[in-house]
Image (cartoon, rainbow, N blue to C red; front, side, top):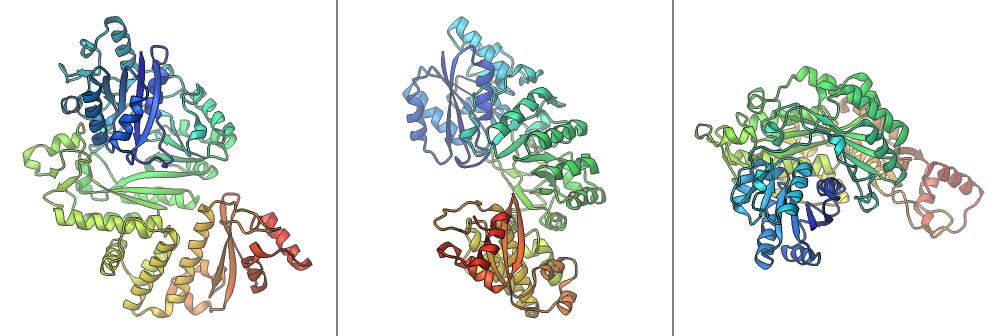
Length: 594
C-alpha cells in the first residue's frame, strides 16, 4: 500500500516548518506500507496541492491538521474526493483530536485518528491489509469513521522508546531545514483550560535520555543551527532538564535552542545552565488578573514571579513572555495592567494573543454554557468575539495594542532601552503602545509589515513626538543616541556576518558604523541613572563607534574620526599605509572586517 502524508505549514520559510508529526507516523509504520511525505504551506493554492498529490499515484492520503491549516485541508480533501473517489483519505492532529466527530462530519475523509497516531495508524494499516476495506476501522481505539464518527477514546503512546528517531533513521534530512523540531517528551502535568492538553492524558512521558544524547550529537555533526524544543514544560523535571543542558554544553555549543519553561521550576543552578548555552526561553504569563486566571486553572504570585524573572535577568538569559487577552472575567483595564507588569520585567519579546476557544478544551465546554454569555467564532481560528467584561470594542483596542507592541517592541527590539523612555516620560507601557498605534493611524502610516530600518525611523520619530508633547526636548539628543546605539548592536547581532570580498579588506554586513553625540560608555550609564540626572553629569561631544558580530555576540568600540572614515570607505580602498594596515589587522582579528 502506498501512502502520502501531507503537512501544510504556516509559512515555507519558517524555521519551525518541519513535518515532524508526519515523519513520526512514517517512522512508526514504514514496515507496513510505502510512505512518502509531502510538504506545502498556506501560501500554496488548493489546486497546486492537489496537482502535486496527484503525481504521487498513491492509495491513501493522510493530513496533519492544525488550527492554522484546517480550512485549506478541508478544501483539498473535497477536491480529491470528487476527482479520485477511490483514494482513501484520512486525517489526524490537534484540531482533529479536539472534536473528531465534528471534523469527520464536515469533511470527506474515510476515517480520522484522535490523539497520537503512531499506534493507531499501525492498527489501521494491518486491518486494511487483512480486510481490504475501511469498514471496521471504528473498532480500533482512537479511530472514527463516517458511519461511526465518535472515536471512543483518544489513543496515546505509553512507551515512547517504541518510536524510532526520525533524524537518526534518516526519515528527515536536517540539511533541508533552517531549524529543527526536537521532541523530548509528550503530555503536560497542568490542566490549563484554554489548551488542548486540558483534557488530554495526564502526566508526562519522556523519550529515553540515550536517544536524546544520540540525536544531539547528530544535530551538531550535521550543522544544525537552531532547535525548537518540544516539551510543554521543559524544566518540570529539573534534574533531567539540568542533565540535558549539560549535554548541550558538551555536545552542541554551536546550536541555538528555544525552550518553553515555567518560572516556578527555575532555580539559580538551572538559570546558570540556561545562561551557559545559546538559548531563548518562552514563558506563559497569560495574565496577572487573578479572577481571569481562576477561569483557566492558572495561578499567579506577583512577588514570586518577579523574583524568578529577576534570576533570568541577573544571568542575562534571553526570555519572552506570553499574554492572552479576552479571557473570561478579564477586562481591557486588567489586560493593560498585565501588559504593564510584563514589560516591567523586561522580556526580550512580549507575544500577545487573542483568546481562541478551542473545541475539545475545558474552556470550550464552559463557553457553550448559555449563562457564560461568551461569543466566539465556531470555526477556526475560534477567536473570542466578546464577553460580558471584554466587549468587542475593547477586544479591538487590545488587538491594536498587540500590533503596536509587535512593531515597536518585538520587531523593534526595544527591550534594552524602552524603560528609559517610559521612566522619563512617566507613561505606562500599555498607554505608550496604544498612543503609538494612534500616532501611526493618524499619519496614515500603519501597516502590518515594516523593514528593520523603517521601524528604527518610526521609533526615533514617535519618541521625538512624545518628548515634544511632554516639553522634554532637551533630553532628545541622548535618547536618540541610545536608540541608535541599541539598534546598531541588534543589527550586528542578527545580520549575516559575511559579505562579498572584492578588495584586500571588506566590511561585512554585520559591522555597523555610528556617529553619536555622546560617549558610548556614558550612554550605557543612562539605564542606571535616571535621564534627568544623567544629562547633568555627562556632556555631549561628537564621537564615532563601530558595532560588530563577535562570535555570535554583538560588541561595540569607540574609534577616532580617521579610523571611522577608513572603515566607511574600506570596500573601495585598494591600498593602505602602514598605520592603516596595523589598525585593519587588529580589525581582522576582532572580525570587524574580513
